Each structure stands twice: as structure tokens, then as C-alpha cells.
Length: 193
Image 1: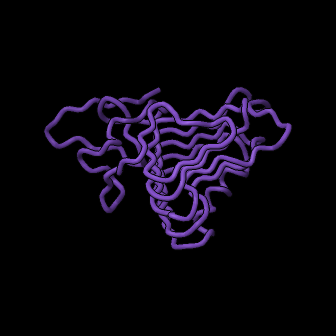
Image 2: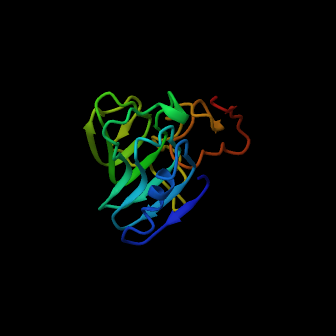
């Protein structure tokens, strides 16, 4: 799922669209999306450890004061993740902006979820074996314009890590949209492989 804008009102219908994607199989790739809503529910929901190898990178999640921005939970008892069709691949959560609502990451001790370099201007809760991650920016506004692009001076500019998507500048930006260099300036274009 890429390059989508999901703009919902209240309730759980629109916010739960992420749970439909993340529950139907392993190896899902969710990137460069904007999710805005005012109700409760989940913008991105990974539920079921039998389906691992999911990537959630460079998304902008705005609003949802009563629900979860990114919810990784619901692992199946007795199942050892990272085996089967996606052996050695774990869920990855990088370079996202969660502005409002909650960022929730709950993993059983010993389960690997790769995550970090997310801007979290929201309530934060960790459970199980999860905890604060390297590169996270906590409690700062991402400084977004009306179309969810980063404004000059945003702490999310060049604050990401390499995830295999093209970027401008020294490092990838956080969120769905990479900043565009000012006309007449030179900027490096990287692929971050």
C-alpha cells in the first residue's frame, strides 16, 4: 500500500483499513501514505505474528486522539516469528510521523521488531520486550503544512534512516513526503539501499 491518502471522520471504519491489509498475509509493504482521522481505532495495525516481514515506513499519521497511530500487537502464543515463508524477516517500522493519538508497540520478550527513527508527537506506550528506540524524535511538532508536507525547519527533515526509498539531502526525511530542494540549489539524490 503506497501513495494513498486515507482521510476519515470518526469511528473505526476508516482507521481499521490498515488492519485489513496487515492481517491478510506476510511481507506487506506500507509506505508514503497519509492517514488522518478524528475518531478511535488504528491507522496502521499489525496483528498476528504468523504474518511477519511487514514494513511500515515513511507514513504520516495525523489526528486520532482516541486511538492508535501504529499498533503492533496480537502475537500468537507459541508461534516463533521470523520463520516460515519470511524466515529471518521481522516487522520493520521506520521514518514515520505519528502526530496525535498513540504510538503503541507491544512485543513478547525475545520477539524482534525493527523500529526507530520515528517522530512521535503523541502518547507513547510500550509493552512486552519493546522500549524507546534509537533515532526517535519525541514530543516535537513535525511542522506540517495543510497538505502534510514538511515545512522548512521541521525536525523531521533529514532525520530518517535508509529504508530503500529515494530521498533528497543527507538522509531520508520522516513522513510521507520528501522535501524538495529550493530551485537553484544543488541537492544529493540517494536511494538508501
